[in-house]
Structures are given as structure tokens and as C-alpha cells.
Length: 148
Image (cartoon, rainbow, N blue to C red):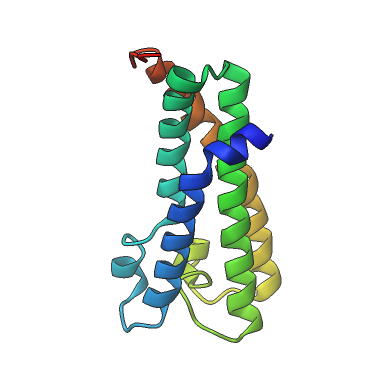
């Protein structure tokens, strides 16, 4: 697990940047449909899972199991950030990109409990999708020539 966290150092910086950026954009007058594409954490995590797994295979000798664990960890950490940001939005009484009905795949405002339940579902589904992305990245990593 420690080797995964060490490898994820750069991802943590990107995740922090995207999280802060998403919070900042939440306080502008931009609507969700336009603003969400600027700092979207789910695509960031999917790309990072594939990228990190590919390069970890080529340069760190990661196994298929290691790559899957790395993808799961990237997905889980990202979803925890989304979960906490959504909860904070509700608890602080803020209307943000985290608790927007569109962010929760709803047409109208969602109560706190339903939103958090939706986020738990997202945690499970997106963690699995990150494992799949990491496995695809691992496969692509076979084509990277490492000069060791």
C-alpha cells in the first residue's frame, strides 16, 4: 500500500488543484452545465488510473494485481473527496457544484440523505471503473519501453 501512495504523490497534487478549483468555480455565477467540465474529478481519476498503471508497469515493475489496487486506491480517494465535499456543501448550507441536482443526476434539489446515498453508490461504481481504467492502462504499459 505504501508504494501505491508514494506513486500517487503527483496525483494528490492534481486532486487538490481540481478540488480547490471546483470549489472556487462553485462560487461564480457559472451554471453547472458549463462549469463542471473545467475541474471534473471523475475523468481526472480515470485518466490518472490508466496513466499511473501504464507507467508503473513500465518503470516500477507493477503486476496486474498492483495495477488494479492502484486504480482502486485512486478511485476510492477521489470518491472520498467528492463525498466529503458534497457533505460539506449541505452542512454549510451552500449551493455548489458538489450538491447541484445535475451533479447528483436529478432534475430537482435532493435532500442530504438521498444525496449521500447517491454518493455512496458513486463511490462503489467509480472505484470499480477506476480499476478497469487501471487494467487498461496496465495493458497499454506493455508498449512503453523502459530504459532501466
